[in-house]
Length: 480
Ligand code: SF4
Image (cartoon, rainbow, N blue to C red; front, side):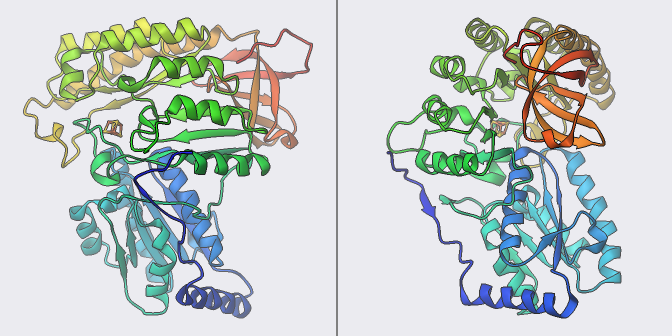
């Protein structure tokens, strides 16, 4: 298969002399205390961060730590931070303040901060100054160095910082501790080249790099052998997958290849940039039976002026045309989106075009955000920032239009039967998702976690549906 220009690193130094010394220390701790060292991770932000936390867990497990849900009992607390919204940033600072108290009571507690926030020098400096008890700081490109950073603190008794701004390296074979056995996140690209004017991702996660298709397919085959039924292919823009591969291999081709893997029953992916959604990809979504009938297609705004200032590189007409083609190819596809309200310069007329977009597409669901200034982005420097009260008023009006549409879409499901992948259980109430990514609660045994069962929808709300398990043959089965 193809080779990529990007260098691949498979040696993550878990067997170096220093790491072996660290592992031995952790074994000594077990003998002395009768328990293993524990870690607790606080993950903020998107699925990319969730997946990074799985890698952090894998690295820590491989050096002898075990996870604890209780941060008060942890020997190591890790903050995996997000920079997309001001809210997430403030939450991290608030929580760091709380952990300071824990550190005071237990000076042996290690505190580490990583993720997107740490890629910004000014925020790093703020953490080092205001929260000087933090022992370890690392970034999105240095997760593989975590054991070495712990070694520096524990053995060399010095605080550790390891940040790489941008990298051409892809680290394969990093150990991972998956949160769920039946579903998994799989990176297919890292970084982003799009520079939407409101977004910090290209600055903190670097330029786009695609993993070699062989590595991705091999990882998914191993996941399937381990009982995984659903994979979510992850990238800031999965649609541009393959752009830096030496031989041509597109995202559509990748979907066909993953569709062939035995044991995998559902394929999801995110995020899809509308400018790179090709006809070939729509065809692949239609033809690959395991690809879920759900597409998350962030529109962000319905006005061409705003889209231009956001540097989204598509028009509302192009977006609507894509949705039309998608619905033509896959008539029962669920379309979800992201919308930003109050982008700089957004006029009342611009906003009404966003409302029109919501009404035309009839989204199954949407993540809606108030625009918030992100330092270092072009939009932060735009002059005509929208006043907060105007943003809030528009935001509420958007929800007044969006929610009834979402509810109506759910109401259309009443009486129908959908295959649901059971994800969690609380007492005898199970929760799972349909192919359309709709959340369903129903009664059943927790042994069904990880199974795909047929559920008849009996009642719906805006954000979830209720149902009951049906056996095959009870009702005609709708492919979700
Ligand atoms: S596509 Fe735009 S919004 Fe998405 S990560 Fe890249 S720059 Fe950010």
